Length: 435
Image (cartoon, rainbow, N blue to C red; front, top):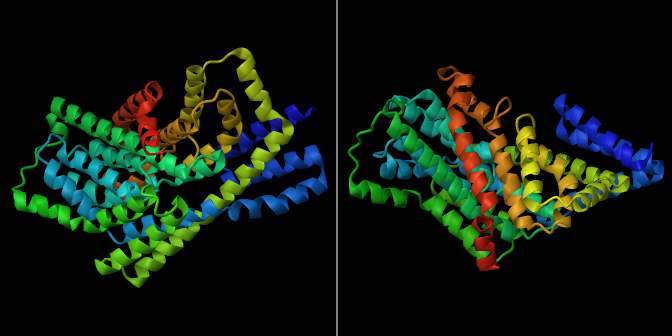
């Protein structure tokens, strides 16, 4: 059996293990180590096992992952989302489907202080869904809007997925963060527009909410969001102003979020402990998967799989748009069954050499990947955000009702994805302007 055949067989076995629900990190690492041993023997394999985990975990930029996670979990446990939803509700509730639109706006705001879509959906879900159910909103619309809005957390910085992509693709993190702004805002706009048009066509989905909200209360709601505004200005003002690096931004954001939450008196030592433990658990899971993905990169390189695929693309004369559409199908299919980080780290060793062979802009490609993964978070049968919302609402809303309500948001996401593919400048405008 040739090296290339061994590499291909390894990929097939890996996919089978993942479909069998073997943990992603174990599947990636196990298949890679067996493959490297088959290709190179025992001593080189032991050398790689000794070097790769240390080299990866000791990567300076990777140290920002636990810091950005801690910042997001502190904001979550300190209930900083309540003021964001209140601000959006005061200004948007008069619109058709206003509470659902407000949940999208609140999620977009919270995305700027958390890099996790799941945390974003959970934080907004526990506030917005009960409000919409109390206003007699359609259950599918109420739960679906929050599950979909949570996915914006993967795109608007600080995004953990963008951070991991930048490290593996060796792309400047700052450029990726800036590149995610307009696609994230476009996603939120498309969700809001879809809610508005649906409710306009079928008013029974979202009965009108008649709240007597004074202009004083509306403007005071801006003041109530000062913790989030201060945190965003402190982290991203310094980051994009060149005061500190993306790696340092994570530590500054974590420290600033703790100080702000204590000043607001919405954080105690028990909540801080919970936030720290959750950040540590998430970091450990990410690092294990990342180590497995790094080993897979070595295995595929030794087997010649990556070079083979790149040569095929060049020899067949496959166009950039045809390649991107083909990759889109792969990601959307995998997103129905696997978790986002696992999908990204499974596929990057395969797709990056191919994409680089066609000189495709990696900033644009990275944003597209995260957009694919966003859609995977809400597509059945394994839509993580859907089950997060289900855990919040309990028996009040059935899972199938949430998935039915989410379908309209998947359509809006596919339209957004089409715009991002057709008009790359939506992604590249700000990075080219600021760097």
